[in-house]
Length: 309
Image (cartoon, rainbow, N blue to C red; front, side):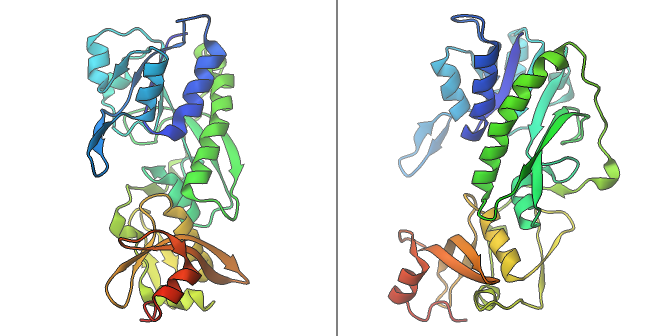
């Protein structure tokens, strides 16, 4: 078994680690023959060159690292199959077709619901109760490929994008390890997605995480605004501005880009944590721009009047 792994962030490491441990046949004989990940970037105030978690994992296991699929192909790396998870770039047809058994992708939603770049934030924003992961065989269209397998995952009331996404990928590690032998031997019958049920997402910008102060104050009093709001990263979706839905939106925006509002003095206030109490939105933790995170109670005591519109 020879596999190339495409991926970048830390939350995909459970799958990479599970496949390695399950199918390794001895020292230096990992089934992972190479990884393709995003190139190192300068990060932080000191602009330190930072390597991706997948890059670091491969270095620790002495596995070749590539930053472009084209370079891997130029080196004639031999592999039956590739696994792709949150890689960060779209592959061309010739890159997909390079692998005899194709590329299988784990997408953190129940496809065809929430295709695209932001499936977990969309799931939470929409107030879905159940989500899961879908394993598909990649094709040229985004999240369009035929379904290999899927699993369901219940959404908890305090889930954020971070916690839910991590749980889905942790669970998908076991799913991937179980299905690989059957997939490679051709025992799994692929199923096309139902195009009529498809919904779509795009990348989220910082501006899209904004909650206007009037809406925030209204929901903090337990009332619902009469307004609705279009959610740009969820194609065609409008959100009713209720306390429950604003709570869902705050959870969906964590850990990035983080929900925020603009105070009466023009400063930004990040809304880090919140919960519902008798259908009233309750802020737990906030962060004024340039300051450290504090409880909402501490903020109100330190800056009285700033949350009035």
